[in-house]
Amino acid sequence: MEQRKVSRDVDIDVLLEIIKNRDNYKENSENGLVILLNGSWGSGKTTFLKDFKEKVDKEEGIDIFSIYNSYEYDFYDNAYLPFFAAIEDKIKLETDYAKLVKYTTKNSISGLLSSAYAIINGYIKNKSDIDLNDIKDNMLGIQSEEALKSFEDFKNVKAKFQKKMQRKCKQKTQIFIIDELDRCKPSFAMETLEIVKHFFDINNCVFIIAVDKLQLQESAKTIYGQEMDSEIYFSKFFDYQFNLYPLNFCDVIDTSDILDMEEIVNKTTEIFNLLNVSLRDSKKIFRDFVSKYKRFKSDGIIFGKEQSIFIIFLLTLKYTDLLFYTELMNGNFNAFEKKIMNDNSTSSINYYNFLLMNIDNRRTYKSICLTLSSALNIEYIGENRRYENLYPKLAGESHKIELANELCNYIPYIKDKLTYKQTIKEIIY
Image (cartoon, rainbow, N blue to C red; front, side):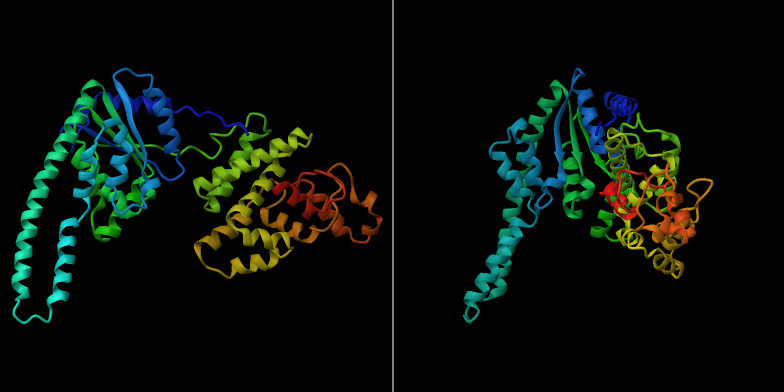
């Protein structure tokens, strides 16, 4: 299915303007710039960054230094190791890479010394002429000495690294992109931010960190406690917050040859809002609908407006509430309705209120579901023919004839000798 290219050129131009005039936007960085690209899941951050890179590649004096998908590496305990490994080919850390990893591994020296003390303690615990407290005091002295040496060595390694980055940034502004940080485990996400803060405050060095800010704040709270002020905490990391607002579910899909598109989108929005369908799921559902619409259209089958809306409703159930969909397709709509009527939760109340809404000026979603439950196994003969003419055996069951005829308005006819249930399954699957 063809994807429709949605232009976010204005957003990209604004972001580039911020980077070019970064001195006006620095709040926490002395030299560099750290931008929070804030967008909820499914808002299109990754696609936006891809388009942004294409634009930057045509700019003079600016380079994309690195695009780092942090989620690919969050199984590491130490965020420093994969981050510096990802840029090794461009900055040539050489022997300093191993030192950086060594010195940024938390408690590496104290952990080794504690282990050594435990071994000595176990070996000589029965030796009455040795004072274990003296050994412990001596080891703490060694620890302080070793820690001081390591700290000095680490400062030298860090300074060498920053000089290399400064030379790189002097030639061109270097942009680092970090994506998917909000999907990482909290400790890994926080460590990654520490790397940016402590290593890359360098002139002409710009970071764009794409996250769902609310999700990142929750990650911080799992480490530092629910009472922390995450807004203030993260304000120390970022100089500028660039909000990327989500695209609508239909914005990135080619819908040019779908009839009554505006009305279908309005009704679909109504379905998604009242059933609390996430943006990510709504895009998936609508994309699936458009794919089916075009496939059947190529076979000469055109979905009417109400038929399209009802198919979207069924697809929404299949993706978000398979239990309801299964009950409906087994003719048990009454049981499901009773269940939600006896549940006072907000979601059930919203569900029931939605079912009472009109799909058109004739029927509500509830009345169509009731009709479908009663007529699932009746053979669907098409919109332009009447059941009473073809099925005399139903003549004494006028209500079934009425039901079967009415359903033609909401379920597309696709082939002979299928029941309504079989027709729906052919469309949905």
